[in-house]
Length: 81
Figure 1 (cartoon, rainbow, N blue to C red):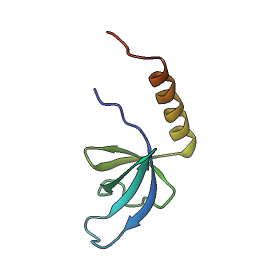
Figure 2 (cartoon, rainbow, N blue to C red):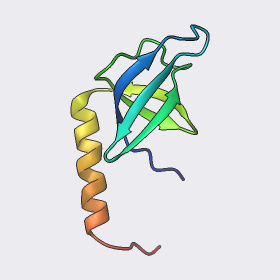
Figure 3 (tube, rainbow, N blue to C red):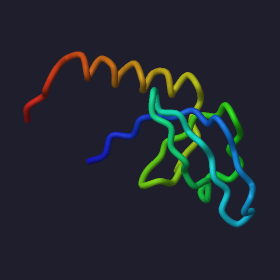
């Protein structure tokens, strides 16, 4: 199972129109990701990234709710199955 954390797009590069890329901020971490599946992505959008590819755009409200839930989960300590 994967846990996807939303990231906010800080920059979009169209240097290669066949493979658009974006710089995405995940809290204090910044990564370059491929926009092959969501080429309509713009600066300021939130995206879900899997294996280096943005796979879905989400609303800011959905992103904030996901981030809140992730903070609560982290604050609750280790979970056991």
